[in-house]
Length: 147
Figure 1: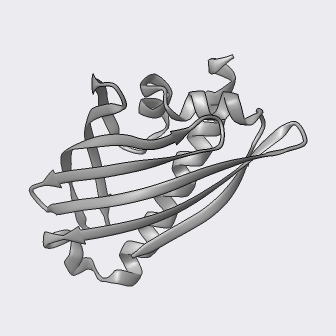
Figure 2 (figure 1 turned 180 degrees about the vertical axis):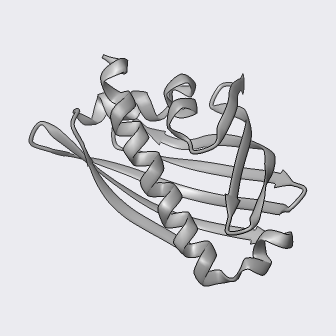
């Protein structure tokens, strides 16, 4: 499943890039994130509690950043497993200066399996878009704390 979107954020690209690669900011912004800890350069372990429709659960996973070109772009690789299934994905994040703001564009390829896949692709896609929206809303609110 492909999920993509564009958001405008109220800081220049270098500040947005720094915040997007800061585990403390990400933990505040990721919906259901209970813990995000650095395990190596550009690698993190994550503990999440999220749900789609009636399928709710806890996930343990990893996040790895690659292809970093500050402040313009990077790629995020995600893997998560839980009792209700798994989620794997790769997201390409691109940042472009737009006046005093940054336009962020993401393009993610996500695969889900297990009970969570039984919910149906339309509901999963809608939930993925809602989670992305929730993330960027919380991320926007967390940005002033990174100054």
